[in-house]
Length: 449
Image 1 (cartoon, helix red, strand yellow):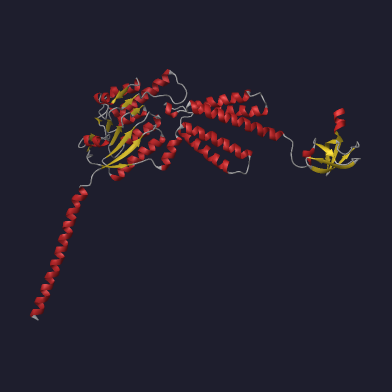
Image 2: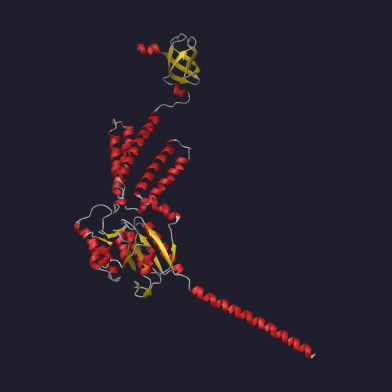
């Protein structure tokens, strides 16, 4: 009994020792894993804005900022190269930057890039404004998108833009006077000039050197809080344009929108002209809808829309009232002018180019005029099917007609009746149809009369 108790006691000690060793191993592993988790490199979200500033750009920036918030990223790095764009989209993007949970770095890169017009507003709104060597920013004077305004209204627009810029440039601690000069006098600055005037914080040739340069820097957020940046050796997470955004971004090109609209309109007309083909109508409808979506996002002049409608009316009138091409030429000229002035973009990149307007206008005008004229003539032509199509047709008597006999007309044999005797081989003209009998008369009588 004593030996058995001693044996059981020894076994218990062995089991307890094994459990202790297992627990010690688990604690060691956890101790090793915690420093590894803490040592994970910080993340920086990278966005590439290399296009005009428009609604799709605003959606892309908002999506990148939301991704940074989800990943608790140290910062959002926006590599910017833009000639400018729409003021409304700029306001949305600036608002998203100012409200971003993560600090936003706007970096004009690579060399040769620019932050023109709206891009300057976006750059100055960033927590960190940076430029690569050989870049420039500025020329931010507002441009009226639709029509012309008087001096008073233009001054109101300018003052509104200046107040918008001042509202965040002063809080960012940058040079308000130099920033306003870029708006008032369309001043543009090189990278070194911008740094000397305290419009940008850093000049760096690459994004890696930029992140190393700002590592450990304390930035004052727009909401008044402060945050220390840890960006050295950060993991770069690039957020690219989605497929939808890529398609919509291409549609924001007014030249593509115009070509889609005209090609779609031509296909829809083809469907009406040759019903039942289905594919041209469906494809044309899709193209027109895509073009209308694009025009809805672009600043469109409604006077130009009226001009395009008038051009189409003139082409239709040319088909109905032939004017030796005068109406068609007037319609084509009106169409070209309407297309050229259709989109009132604030920068040349957001307007219809004259090559597109002239080429597409002349091609569409010519094709439309010809097709409408053919369709109008077809509607005015006599019916070409059934007995009624034989009225006025000339046939040849195959046998004596006195008063009835057979004639050959349009390659078919018909029973004919004539008040005047007709000899075989003589030409006759169909003047009426009674059932399956043609009433004819000799051609010689019509000629002699």
